[in-house]
Length: 135
Image (tube, rainbow, N blue to C red; front, side, top):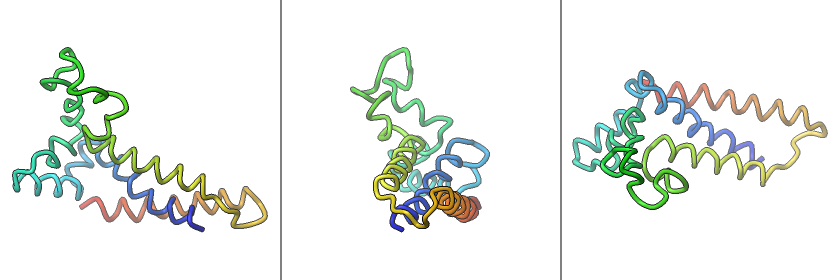
């Protein structure tokens, strides 16, 4: 049951990845409102430079230029989740999925029924969080 809850909550992060990854969705989302709020408060590290995927990808590079190399050690590989919002939400989503796998307990006597239940919960979570995150 814990893994089912993790899948449901994890879909928040999966939907967030979808929204942040597409400019037209991002511009209509609560993520954009959050980024604008941080920009107004002059907390640029969590503003659009971090959440807007169309520009945030540059954060991993020195002087925002891939030709200049990484901004810091590992910024384009294993530390990439601290450089932009899309990779951060991806990391959190993966942690939910991996935790759900590790904590998996059978719901029924048939694995296929369990998979269908998980798929339905994932689908419901996806629709709920997409509705909530898009203005």
